[in-house]
Image (cartoon, rainbow, N blue to C red; front, side):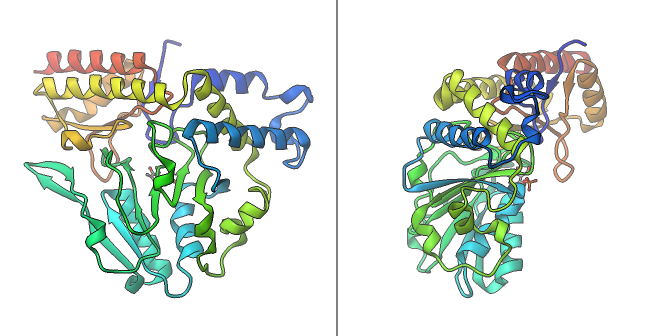
Length: 363
Ligand SMILES: Cc1ncc(COP(=O)(O)O)c(C=O)c1O
């Protein structure tokens, strides 16, 4: 089979080297004669894996020692409810910044659990000259007492990324499901970071939570024990049986990231990949980006064909050329190329060549 480049937004492609290693040791992990899926999560070998995974992630993201790293169930959406139940207690209020579909969904879940009266939302994307642009308000001017402010620095569906940091008087909670580990960030600016694993970390279902220890003193609501951060901390993320295979693959991805130069090297590569793709979109009248330059996502490149009647032909020809999963999210249409850490430069170059040839053929 010739090379396939998979631009799926999630579950997304994983690094080929990681998949090959996992394939090689699928039936015999760590010389034990059984798969990693078949050993106790409390065995010393598996505990060693989890310790290595945490230490690698701490090193990759430079996580300060007053933050806990949790490996939890329930993906990104599981955390939409977990943050509310863990931090709002009976009467706490929170502010949700809305910059696209996922932050809106997080706000809706919070309203459902905490009541609309306790959740304020602020729309921070404006259309300027037909392009979506983020306009961050000065949160220090808001005279309210919130337990936290929540936002999504990379909106996977809309292709919008926020590169500025959020200057806030309250702890900042970020849904980094689609851009964690893609660029350097200062963890100490956040109260809590969470990410569903299925883009830059590993298989879906697993979520990573990085939480500052003082937030754990906030009042929580009675809730499902497996989503309780305090129990997760006390039990080293093993209050119940964790998703062991997903944890193993995440550990392998962290190890791969270290081998290829860590987050700094990834960031350089991600800048280059996004630059080449947006340059192609900008240079050809055939394609359009709906996002202002300063907020264009490096992970999810959304674009339209100026003649949308050619959409299905574009997708069919791309698929035939081995470029798969380029269809935009059903809520926004158009195209989306998700180019997470695992996507090699060669995949982006092949897509750019295809887009140029398709435009030449159909102009
Ligand atoms: C930014 C963001 N947040 C949350 C989610 C929801 O994740 P999950 O499907 O794991 O619940 C997604 C899924 O793609 C996402 O992209």
